[in-house]
Length: 365
Image (cartoon, rainbow, N blue to C red; front, side, top):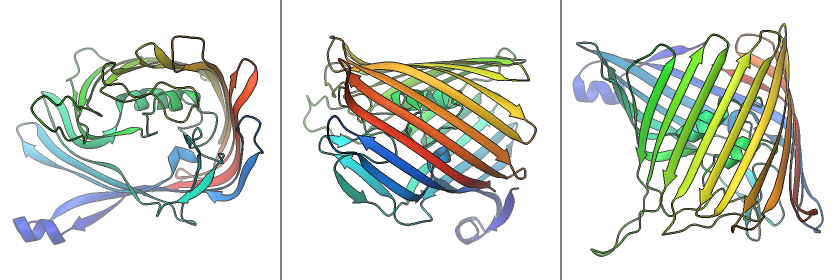
């Protein structure tokens, strides 16, 4: 259930007027157990409370204003936080090890507060445009077909491949434009984001983080399909694999996501394919999933395979799985069980083996 507040402080001071805003968010905690074995090293493990579903907690404010002539202004500002102990991230000698859970190496702690989204927008007969920090088009495309709900845990292969080199799924300094409806069920969106790199000198070409993207989506009845693409300057593909493409000043990173789903009522079938390439090096993933509703409960399972390489030679094999069980206690509260695993092997030998098991409660407001 959404609540509203009267945001008077800053707005009234400037305009002398009052504006309505909606408060929304997500609270979720789970008892989770994570394990990671990197090569022949000893297994790392971690147990305790942490976030799983949707990558963590959020608290947001959003609102809109009718400007007349069919034009509407809107805003969203959303922060993420960790309500239990400060978030603990495990990192390996060469960087983090896949997503979530335990990894080889030392332990790092952050304060758990971050800027999830912050943008302003205009909408009308021309379509809509939003400016600020937003989810990337490729992440939204992959997330829309993930039975695990974009969970922050081992096993979500399609989401991993759609993340950037620093594991971020959002783009700062982004402009997204959605065309007005031309055909019923068809969505067309284009985007541009700007990195934070500073150019030094007239001949500088450092555009690290600059990107352009598009999304084509179509939904009719029980069927939906999405194609999303993003091209990014001077960056590598997802940074958590051992055998991955490095950043390049000459080859752009090109990422594509294709998603399909069919809801037959008694079951919903999902398919996702992702590819992130920097020159001849690439990371790919293909995932098949099914979810079945049982009244207030639902159960879903997906399995994926992929490959990651730092050269044109045969790379490391990837294999993932997720099991998700949800039980709706109310319209806003869900109890859940999650189990996921992801392995990376080279010539049959273990490179990384991760697993997550979690049981928790999620409440949205």
